[in-house]
Length: 276
Image (cartoon, rainbow, N blue to C red; front, side, top):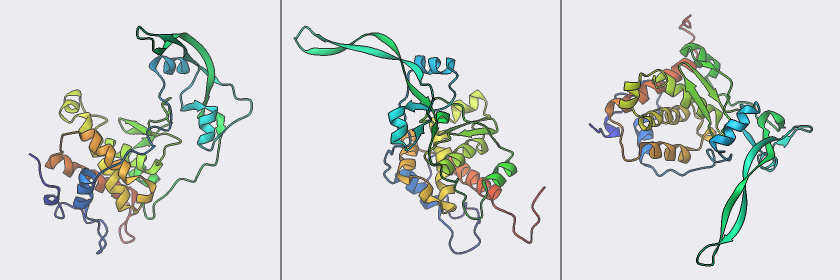
């Protein structure tokens, strides 16, 4: 059953703020699902190397994002003096006329080229992590019993990942706080511990919608809309959903996860002792 978003709220919206400045989560959900999105640069800042080259990099001890010297400079990072470039296979191209007399580029073979440097072999100005007022990342992780682990993925375009009750955020993620909330969403929504049958029923597209929608609502509630790209987030949600539309229970699960994450990171009122 498909339910109109407006039917879910305000009755289902948790009373979090206790004042007249409450955000309408129903309207935010409608915005995420219906307002046009736009792909940004978050997921295409790095070149995605072939499986063979990823394997080659792993054999060279690489477990973090890599890029060429020039690309790191474009990202305002400088390769450290004395760093040794990592090798990948690159095609050797040549031109040959086809049967119509038109020159075509063809692959004549492959050669090893040392051209990539890891993130840890670069330096640049790292901005201090953004911390929303009245919400603590550390408090939320402790309250939810979720642990952050080191990021060990060669693919730089992956912003983060989660498994069981652990998650990792790319050290150079475009929007670290939004990515953190997205991964917390996956964990709170139990996407990371679901049995195979449950993963089939609640397929990847719905799962990604729920995690990103949780991040969308949470970031707005925290007044951190400037710490994300709303249009890109909407495009992410709409692309993963495709022609599908979330039903009543799937959207309510997003509201519940958002409520849990917000409450976990907020300090207890002064007249209420914090739970041990």
